[in-house]
Image (tube, rainbow, N blue to C red; front, side, top):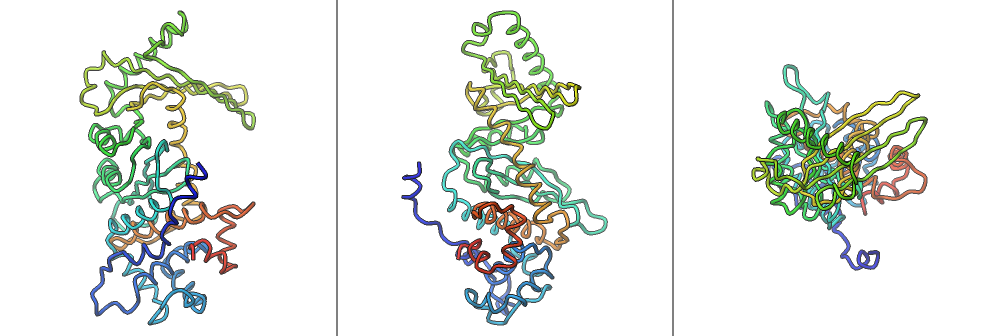
Length: 385
């Protein structure tokens, strides 16, 4: 594997992808170069900045350093210029720029779990408007954000997920989505991208949820009273994990079945090969709770592989959403004019990827931002310059 990676061509620098982004401004208003605006905005994120005023402040303090690799023909843009520019950029063109860059640094997602989930931008809202939501894709094993799409006004994640799927390179990966994404159209979109899916099944499909729940109740009971090897041969597989941490013991039992002869709607779910149940038994301070969750999947029979995908899904919460809020203060962002919220969200995810993929021994992500603010050489290293 390492020899194969060494033979891969060196990815194009991020700044070159920025240079390919179409400039939405009229020629007479192009006082500052678009690439300069994007790079200064990104640098501001990488040193712990938040809004457009922080971008201007960073630029003015580090102007001499920035001129070592940027042209800055008219000096540093004002915060209003940053705002207008990020509001005007086509978010889908910026997303395509982001996706192409990620494809360059992570050329294959084969076997990877790609978790898709939504997140609110709590302060990026005008009075009387609903809180905007961003749907993100997260590569669990590589620890990279792959892209995101803003949910359109007066809509929900069901409309945004297909747009995000269409933009991503997903061949060979396993896409996991919570219950809101358990839709026939979304399952078909994933199969059409030559990927597999594991979709959480909950009360939004009440009849199907009840049928799958009853199926596993009978199957697990049968396995408990008869020879499990005989019962599960060919159509059922199971896997178990046990975690002990800080006085908490959690046992997870994964059951997967390819016995779908009874499921009348099977032809309507493109690629559907199996159903699954996860039973979580938690014991904390002597008190035990049991939770059962159910899934539809295009994966063939392999409970251990399915378990890895189900567990990998939570990386989008713990490693992406949590980091965006705690490290990059996404919940505090006030960018909300036109396309600004989605474009600045893309910028934050680029910054997060740069921080995650740039090694620095015994340094947390938050500390990397501090080091970048104090050490221009490390900031250049993050940018890949």
